[in-house]
Figure 1: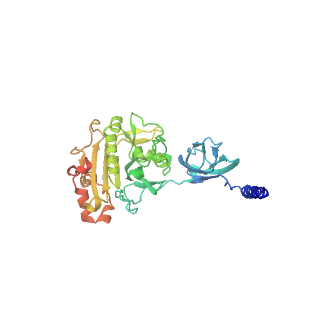
Figure 2: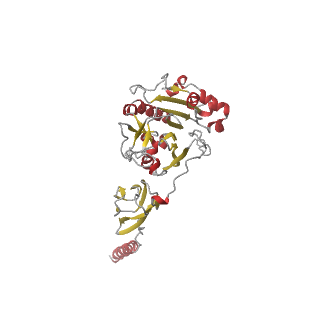
Figure 3: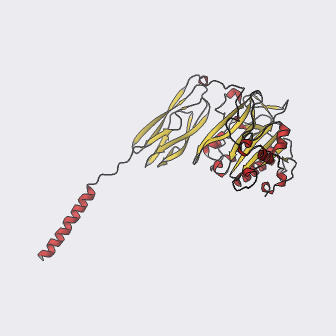
Length: 386
């Protein structure tokens, strides 16, 4: 009996020791919540960026500034894709606003600074070479045509680089062309933002205000489609005035929309599709006005020229090309397909418009292969039409 009592007492002591060991362990340290801005100082023009919250619990975000919008403004756990949008600063002075994070009983504050319009000099009108960038989608630019070459960047999982480039006409307030790479990854995921806005790369006086529609019944026609950039920040940039032209509604919603869908289909079959979308202004273009009364040219025609690269394609260094030219008066009920009169080789479009497209292709594959790609008749290549 005494032996059994000693055994039970021993187990109790071991149990108490074990309990003591557990109860004496230090509780895990929970790090303080953090809040960070992609950019602490932004342009005077309307724009957006991402906020980043790190926390283990629930959180809310707020600001007293009526020129800032935050979406979403509440959640739980870490978030790297909170959209912070800000309006154009129309005042004479720079301004600032605090953004407040409440989480885990703590308050974290960051400050956003927005420049005054006078802090940002207007860009030079002449000059700027796209060929120095080396990007495959770029047409040739010139230093003596009064046009200016710009580009927008984007960042998303697995990629940080250009979103799209454009060649700006200050007299007619349209981009002569918009160029960009496209594949499934670059297209991304998300939805259309409809966030019509001024382009932060240009003063408001040098671009159309597309926060309202063009006068005279013209659609705001994208050159890089919204559906080609679905991630939030990348999509926002597709709604800038520099990416828009006044376009006939039926043309925009039918034949042009179907062509855009074909381009996305070609991109899905390619490692990368290099796309140039452009408009033809002409000598004395018809003009409409934006909501501010600025005069904007109505293009006489539109075109798309594309260069597909697939590592599995055994000819011409993996490249093949196609071009489409459509008068703005084209029958909107038609569909661009094999042997449609709008379909031609890249070289034929170059000769028609006097533009050297894909100026960096010869450097990648040599002059002979580049010539073969650009002169090939896409009507003879079923890959485009299957």
